[in-house]
Image 1 (cartoon, one colour):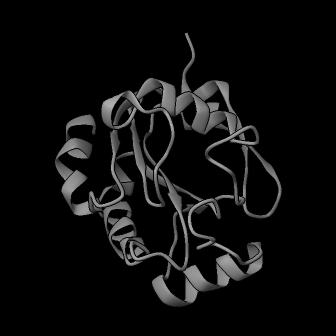
Image 2 (cartoon, rainbow, N blue to C red):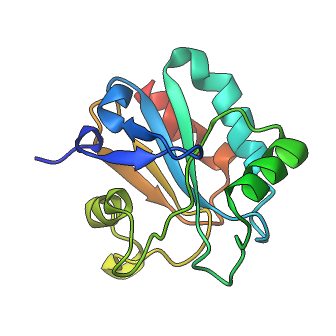
Length: 159
C-alpha cells in the first residue's frame, strides 16, 4: 500500500525532501499560484498553520503554472511574493505540474486516492487541497473555493 512516505519532492531551494520525514504529521497539501483569484487563501493557510503547527500540523504549498498561467514567475519570484504579501512560514516547495504526463508523482497518487467531482482524477484549478492523516493516507480532497477556515474541523479531528 502506498502512503505519503513513499514519495520524495523538491523544496524551493532544489534540495530533496523525503516525505517519510513527515510521518506522524497531519498535512494539508495545496497547489498554489500567485496571480489567482484564490491567492488570498495564502493568508488563511498561514493562519491555520500557525494555529496547529504545535500539534503536528503542516502545510505544503506546491506552486503550479498549469491553470491560466497564474504562476509565471521563477522560484525566487514566487518566494519573494509569498513572503512580502503573506509572511508565509510553511513549506513552499518547487514549482510542479499537477496534471498531465509531467505531473508530480505525489499529485498523481493523491488524485487517485481522492478523486474530484464525479470521479475526476484531474485537478481543475489552483488551490485544490488534500488533507493527509498521520499515517500518510489521503483523507479528503477540497475544491479551490473551500477556504482553509472551512477545513479546520477536519484538521482538528486528525490532530
